[in-house]
Image (cartoon, rainbow, N blue to C red; front, side, top):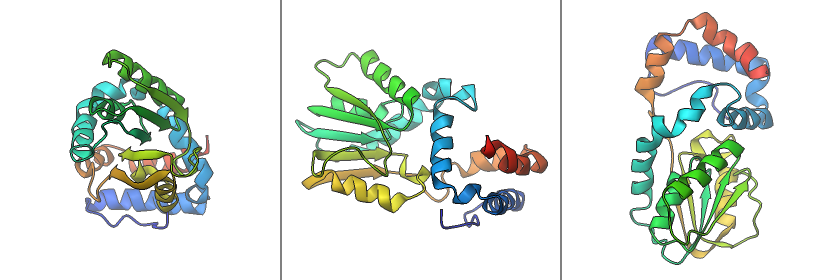
Length: 216
């Protein structure tokens, strides 16, 4: 979280709202509270702030399926031990199993997302699927060195406070000559949707959100 100001493309109003919120977050200390940020993300995916997360699969399933398919298009999973870091609802886990992974370890900070991943694997009726579900932090993976043939991470790195630490952890648990494959948010990812959301949101509410909501 080294950058305080938004430098990507956005309308003037959106930049004003985002940067004002960023400054307030820094002044009250929320943007410097890394562990607090990680806890709020985890709580968000556990459904503490919005019930929309319970429809996450229906809302974003197709989107994430396309990303996972492209991520794994050139990754050989056959007979390999695979880690899915930030597995979410299990789209990438299922894709790795379909491509012949012998074992998949699915890791996520959210217990609810892990339950969704488990349900997704079961719904696909994948025969002889060997999956281990692990609640954990991508920045401090609870595994020994060199224990995975393939490490996958789809649309997670962009939400981590310390991305370099997470990447170092992924490299640490990867075996020599293994494969690390990452898909993450681009500089303009969801730009249109974010801009539209901010346009219909009161600036007063947006600023208040940074002062109070994140303190809960």
